[in-house]
Length: 325
Image (cartoon, rainbow, N blue to C red; front, side, top):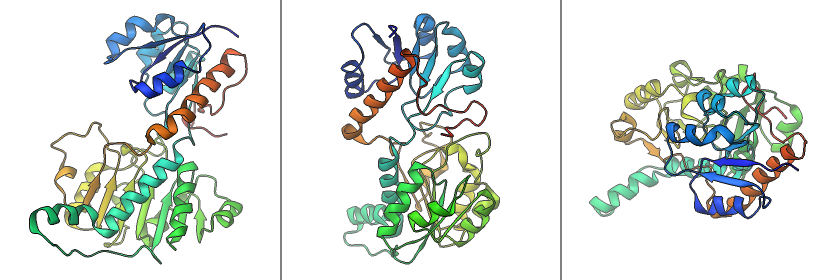
């Protein structure tokens, strides 16, 4: 097995320690913190593998020995997959590893909206003993847009709340519908039905050229006035300006957002001033310390496969920009 030099674009000490304890002794980890594109360009020339969520065409083309880019999470939207493909650099995702924490976070946002948790919290601190309306989840319709590993975990949890579940998936199957106890599972053509019938909508799709702005003004205005939108995928799948408009108008009841079009979110973003939204700073997939070992095991194992001449797992399709396996 060949020796490798790995550039890690993550400063989490626990994650780095996990990688260091698992790699062969003759491999080398390179870290830069804080890092900038210019700083990375100075060290990337002899790097074999990049582990991180972002890699520009400039960075990829400057890495003469680069063989692989391994993401830490699900999406590869921060990586120039076209530039990597042109260089025959394999891009691999960690899809599935963060499915449980993201699904749990989606349910937390959903419950916070339904039970008015943040509104009650704010008011009890200033008004003493407030009363605000809340909603039951039992019997309500949940629409899941994107029934991949995250969407499946959301569906499992929603069943425990006795929710009626509708979903959209690129390649819908009757077997999956039955196994998950869904009332309906359709392809992308069924998106309007999901938007119209759901009381809560969870977005759990990867960001690709196909899904960018997938939820636009037209789709948002199909929603019930009493419905809520939860996004734990990527900010780019939603037309953020259109979302702000419908939230201000009260055309939908509210939204729970872990992701934004531009991150970190600007303090002058109108979403931060709206009372009918619950916001978190793109933390759904973290999973805390509990997932660090599992993540490190997979990443190192996948790089070992590359070094051993095997095909790595969860390779991103260069044309579709997501994992199809």
